[in-house]
Image 1 (cartoon, one colour):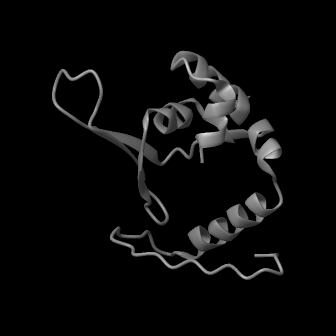
Image 2 (cartoon, rainbow, N blue to C red; image 1 turned 30 degrees about the vertical axis):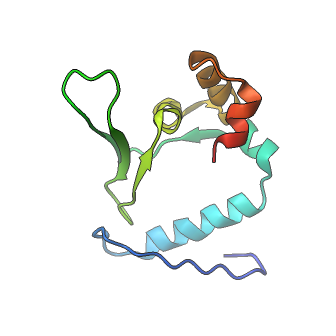
Image 3 (spheres, helix red, strand yellow; image 1 turned 120 degrees about the horizontal axis):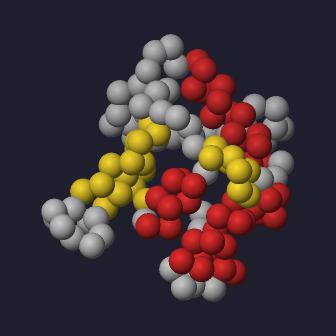
Length: 124
């Protein structure tokens, strides 16, 4: 990383990783540098694209209106997996680079009938 502040990440890692790991580690530090140099307003104005190796997994009872849980899983690099809520899954599903993050969150807020400011505040 190019930051003067060191970055230490300690994780319990139950997933297999893709070798060689170097490109994934470099990409991790590039993301940290990006986040350090962009405030919330800049992040909301930016356009993001979901990595093509990310898939969505849903678990729930057949025919149920909503799944019990949704996981976004990366099939390359560190092969991360994270459980997301409906907002997170919807956000990821729309990240094709055409809309800003703020526009996506505003559209989701309208769909779920939530105040856009409150949704932005509670979204990581």
